[in-house]
Image (tube, rainbow, N blue to C red; front, top):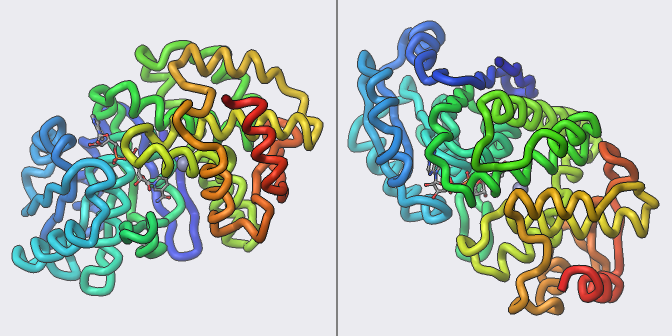
Length: 357
Ligand code: NAD
Ligand code: ZN
């Protein structure tokens, strides 16, 4: 499957399938005849599992590899600085290309390296997680500052995305769960039909078939792209992608990044947002069935006991989109029909107590 992404600054293809790694070499030769060198950025885990395969298909090219620590630790100033130092030491130039081999963290780091090295050189994403279907589309690249996640970054589009499903086979189950929560999110905010398909076909995340994975990723990418590209026309719909994230981000931060994956936190946030959608917006939705389904998939649907609800509410109020004593939520009026609403903090605290403990 190939999805064409259209943005103001660039159009680029996303290739999804088994063995798409093989197509990278021909793509480079065809589109970048003057290419000098490839700069592969990956992390320690992915390097151990998949780097050799990539190097094998890139045999004809000069390559330099930079290996970052895994996870969020790839997105520090120090790692960013080291990546740039490597690029300079190995004399990469403006005709060089950055290849990001890894999940969203590697993608964010690599994209920012590519955006800033010599004022910008091309980059190509080779996502190795399900979550990266979300991060590989939308053009946001960033590293973290000690005072805030993703605070230092740019909008920078890749030349292409090669999603090789072969590489996803080594994903640990928590990472599958993390990414799949965003697939479910994309269905809920945009496509009832896709949501029905997911909930009646996906019953075990340990044994996703290639077809299931491929459909989930392509659909997810198309939906993400639809919201992002509409926002280039300034309609504000990009905010709908935050469904489940108001509470999700607060849980993730309070748990400490890395203890609970992003998607696992967002799933609890989605359960809450669905419940509130029923109460505030008259959404008609079988929430109990939904909860049973996602629990079968291995998600938690309650807030971990040791977290303080007051602290979660404080965190939600710090969200950059919230104003004063109200908290900014994305609700659904129907599946596929998101709306924005401000809710006051006391209401939220009371409802958290009632539903999620
Ligand atoms: P990640 O890159 O940290 O990957 C998660 C973990 O899985 C890491 O430990 C990694 O080493 C491991 N891993 C990756 N591929 C693997 C494979 N094939 N087999 C085994 N292990 C593998 O993160 P992620 O979950 O993919 O993405 C999260 C990051 O993405 C966050 O930093 C977040 O801020 C960012 N993000 C960015 C956007 C955006 O629009 N730019 C959107 C969503 C998320
Ligand atoms: Zn998310």
